Image 1 (cartoon, one colour):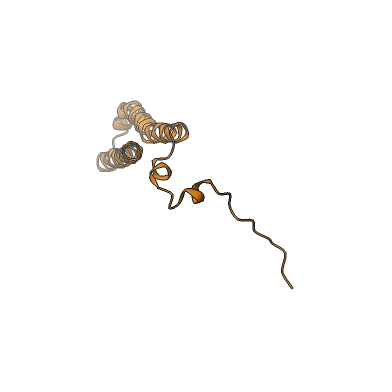
Image 2 (cartoon, rainbow, N blue to C red):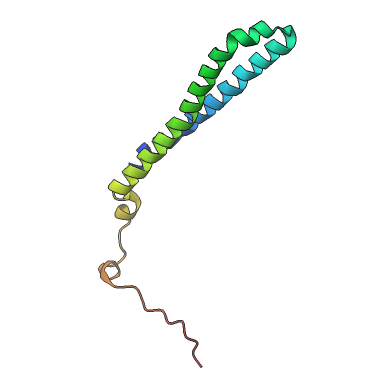
Amino acid sequence: MDGMLSWLAGVGTTAFRWSALTFIVMNGVAISAFVLTRDRSLVNRWTGRLLAANLALAATGLGIPMLTTLTRAAIAAVMPSTRTSLMPARDKREAIAAPERVELTPRP
């Protein structure tokens, strides 16, 4: 179970990383193409395509990590933790006994 949770965390992180990198590279190429050519028709032709690509990258870069985080939270809420169930108690009395009472009043 922990393997699945870590895999989901890795998928979300990788999706964000690749989306952010592609966003930066794509917009950097677009800005440098405009600066080098100084052609306003280039901006008019490519604005719609760049906007659509930016929205798709934002959706994957934010949506996939959010989806994997929600999935991990749902799995963790439904399934018991494997770490606590695999830890054996040292003594049967420790597993059953209530915690000790702690007094907060100072003793004279």
